[in-house]
Image (cartoon, rainbow, N blue to C red; front, side, top):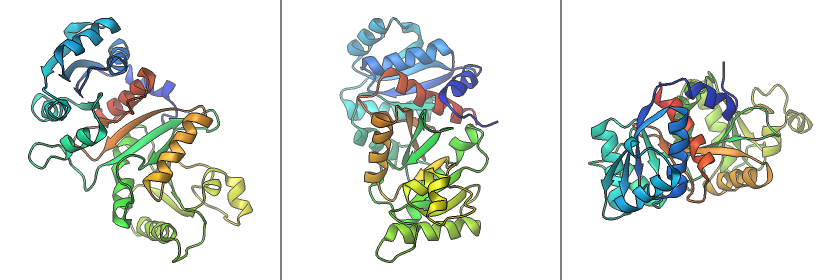
Length: 303
């Protein structure tokens, strides 16, 4: 049965054994707070944390977490902290990578390093998984943090990067909405052409295990009634998408933030396309959102 919200995900992950986690630049109260919550639930064990040892120890003490659950690795700066955390994945068996207080560019640079990184797919992409009172299940939005203006081939890769996450959540054939401003294909709007091409790719088996429809305006994608009003009949996706593929980062980022501020959403964010799931939270995210991302990552790590 598919996991549809974070309450169900917590229940499922609470039954799993703990795994080792590597955290880049961990000297942040919200980061340690999220790890403490994961420790209390039992699905995270040893945390290999990189950065300033004194600052990390202070955060652990303030969170009242067990210092024995942490292995602190000193780093001179954030760049080194990122590289050392990635090294813990490669050499110490960490199953989840977590972004701490360092900038996203440094975190991604460490993952992508040609000699010492952990990139495993054609591209890295970001996904945020939202739970909202106004929607009946998890809703994923991608890519909202990494690829600014994805090409057709990159959009295909972004879709396929999400496959292990949906498998971990028990969604066999995620319904995927390809967003554009309109539903008709037009050479004046490249997003509509890309969407049409991706639908054909899915029909011909070039994109496996996804139900894909588009181009779709957001209203048609999220509402079956709106789709019917626009003359879209028998869509397998309209009104019930699991995944929204935005035409570019600006749309995805704005859509996600609108969910947070206007949709009362809770969420978690991951980087996909690396050897292990990589948690990617904003530095402003609280410990609950960080826990949500860890829950998603733990689900993937169980595959």
